Length: 310
Image 1 (tube, rainbow, N blue to C red):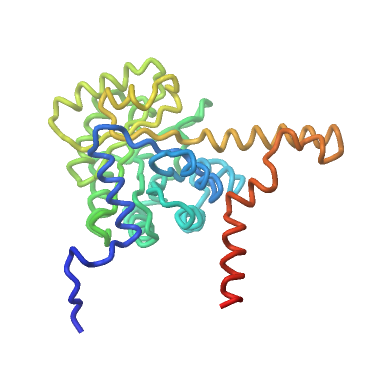
Image 2: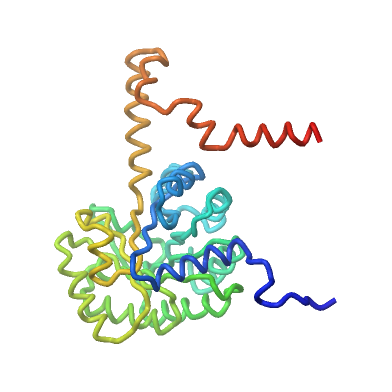
């Protein structure tokens, strides 16, 4: 039988609703502020504190879920497994850091398709050559990028393969991180936008923001209106509002909850090691009842007991 529901009466899919909110935010007058989650609990807390979106950090997944460096050691399916847990507990749009798509063109396409099917709002694909090097690493590391035309080809193929019209593909430009300069960064950003990317993330280590501002001057002259995304980890003194005023539609606070978690665990373990009793740590850690509340323990028990009575 044909589906007789009109577009106006057809129920809105949960994933489509979240994607629609992300797209509306990217074209809005205030920036979308996403915060990095490395597990389901951190995603719950990000939503509870009123942020706009959840960023599933590749760094966070590698370090916190698998205890491995962020060097393309985590597979697409491993990232997808963690992402599904995060997506399932939050009503916020989920944006996933999918590194370089875990390989060549076919890998990038499969990555976009699988995460689209998983219901996430967006994925971010960078132009670092496989295996990648984390952009924040300050030590000596050789950085090579996929050629501009090839990366544009990969992005175009990923957009053609996605199954949901509202799914968002963010193209991440690493030219400034790799030391290729502003001209190269702008060339790549234009190519990726023309390939169909829904947003462009421009990354930089320049704390003065000179690189970013020079890039923005050139970008605005192109007349392209593809939304821009910033990750201010390496220029942390700028607020989301300040970055929005410069032209960014989305600001990602990528790894602060992960780093806070590690520090809190280290401090607690140090106390427990020194004192040898749980009471010593109690003033510094969350109450058990608070954890129960965060995971909706009371509501779950009440629902179970209601079913028994019925």
